[in-house]
Length: 103
Image (cartoon, helix red, strand yellow):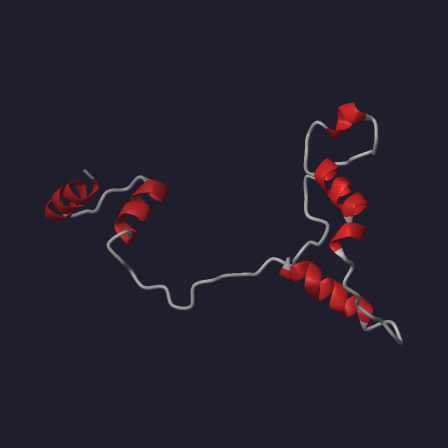
């Protein structure tokens, strides 16, 4: 909802004047009925209002790129290297230690 609010605010800045008014509950019954139709899957069978379900959001946010700042070897490093290269450590002692960690 934050994305929609920021979109509305940016669009409102294009107008010279805008106002927001509160509509009394008794005057919103038609809108509430339409909202109810839009949230039910059975609305297609009613043939009252054409309802379209969107698979993707109408506001697409830019993806945030995330990256590692510092790459240091961890206890997972030998395991990842084995999964990528299928090469075990050279030293027999390290192989035993590695297999103990994995199994």
